[in-house]
Amino acid sequence: VAVEGSRSRFRLVAAAAAVVLVIGAAAAILTLTGDGGDDVVAASPTPGPVTSFADIAGRTYRSQGAGVQMYMYFLEDGTMNVSANPDLVVDRASDVYTTRFEGTQVFITMTSFRCPQPDQGGTYEIQLLENGNLQFLAIAEDPCAQRSSFLQRGFAPVP
Image 1 (spheres, rainbow, N blue to C red):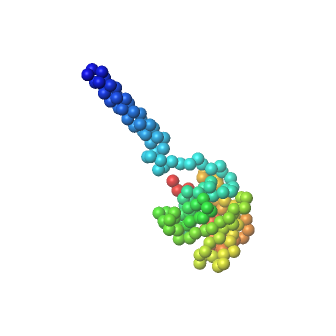
Image 2: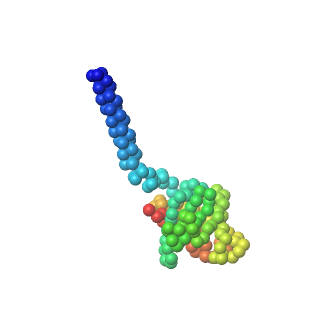
Image 3: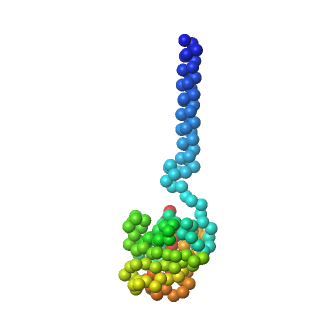
């Protein structure tokens, strides 16, 4: 009977130790990632010309300068969503820009009444600045004046 009690006690201690290890590991993971991974921040991309939306995808940026605050969200497929409401920019954007990269140059079009249709598109270079802001540099004159003036405002990342 004494041997049986020792085995039960050993199993109980081993189980308790395993639980403590699992809780400790979970606490370490939560400490390293914030609150379970929801706020894990990807490594910052290198400043310079953007050559792929993978560098800035999944981030929301706020327009700078005068005028209505606008928000831009970049998807990895090259789609740029724009909205005046930061809560709607990801899923229900008011404007959607489509793009195509060629090296550091990105060709941008949109299907909106804001640009003459069919949209001839504009060619830009997107610069990621040291402070994390984005700057769109027109490579040639954009036939859509509204898109051109909007993109030239510059954009700061939304924390």
